[in-house]
Image 1 (cartoon, rainbow, N blue to C red):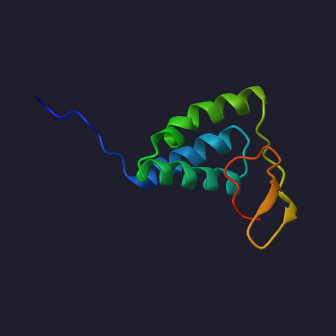
Image 2: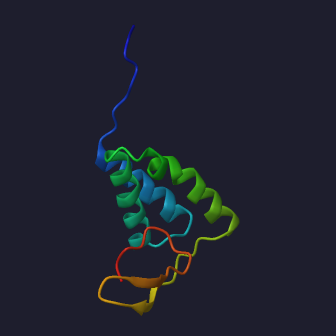
Length: 96
């Protein structure tokens, strides 16, 4: 039985995600961070939170359902061990 799997270089996948999200109006920062999160999840074997989710994000951006592209998260409350963060319905943002 022939193995018909195709391996796509990580940089190509990352670039593809960024291009898709930029085309739909996400900022460069948000797009790059989302690409990092999705590819890292796949590399760690968490496929349910990897590239598999790109279609969901595309659909949400197209319909304007939940994802925003022009905000920054806000820390509402912080202790030495936890933080309550309002993510402002952003995607892929991990830089407070």
